[in-house]
Image 1 (tube, each protein chain N blue to C red):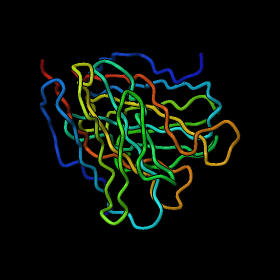
Image 2: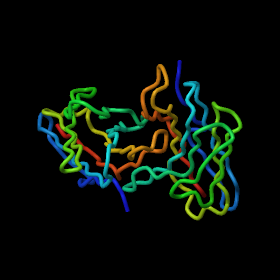
Image 3: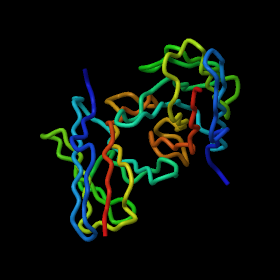
Image 4: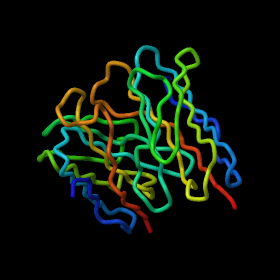
Length: 115
Length: 118
């Protein structure tokens, strides 16, 4: 079955460490890619998205993600994490030619940043 | 203030009872969605609607029902047939690509309703 995979279930980092969260998808063709974040007790928010163009996408709060088509990957990165980045992160894909159909989400990665 | 509202925030239900979760949006979006979030499972799609008076089943529709009588409203009923209804329920909306003023395919989420069956 076609899917979205997030390899890390729970990541624990110290403040100022660098972050990379993996996301792979199994759809062929042109896809739209998203990272959402869910801070404790808050709405699911869009962190960044890729539709076309530069494969390195900048998002809010210093996050970025790189689309590597040959690897079917869209990994999320941040050079130096802060305690406030503690949250759950979800990768999502809008499958090819699907217009307004639902996103397919990965199972999420919980990030805990410790002082 | 534009956005998506869900009510109630917390809901308790006895086994065997149906319960309806509310979702309202004032973003003028055509499409609306219901997801269920369980720990370690990510978001799983229950139902979605691309236009008023039309909706489709998602991956885990059994034991749930929806209606879409108005563009801004997409209520979800959790029926007694749902075997394991305790979960966090998220509603979202979006516009199709190409509409002026819309973000192509980006889904916007409500704050969620946490349902607990006692």
